[in-house]
Image (cartoon, rainbow, N blue to C red):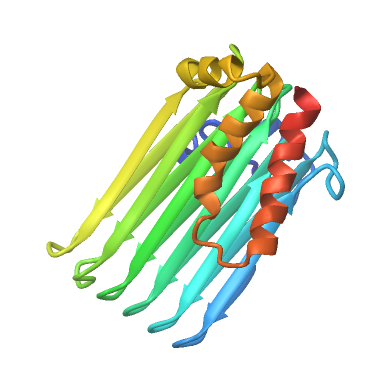
Length: 250
């Protein structure tokens, strides 16, 4: 029997570990991106294909070759516990791009967990995650960036923002940097708040309903996560999954 993690484990600190009972934690998708090539994966955890009361894990280990690029874009809008976990190793001049959104209410937990290892010089990474939750819902982002001693000219960034749509919802961010090179650019930012009441008042004064006002504000908020996705149809599909979840709550 495999030992299940607990909330004492850093990568599972805010997770719903009780929901892991009977779930295999040994399944990882191993991906190797050859030098100079591009890999893209879109992930949608949604009511139409997932059990709203179940657990859904997506786990990736990605080795990005020299000058190659890997992109992961995902939305987690279903499951009692929905989790996308990514471990990345970047070779020289490689790039990793992550855009993620979590939405939900009830007592659900939806989370992105990443570990990005800059193993060689001149690699870049960018991670943008947005969370919008209500009820007793929880949205998490745990992001680790490791820059090894010889990985000079690294440029790595994480940007997380959480939106609490109702009292009782929770959003957690744990950005971590471990840097052993001295010629690098590494940045992380995290902000958690509520809807801009001034903007809602402005919209109401122009005849927009409270529901539509909130939808438009949330749409603008989560849209930043998919800016780097250059496929307009796929970008709209991911946005629609997130917004449809919000619409069912309104």
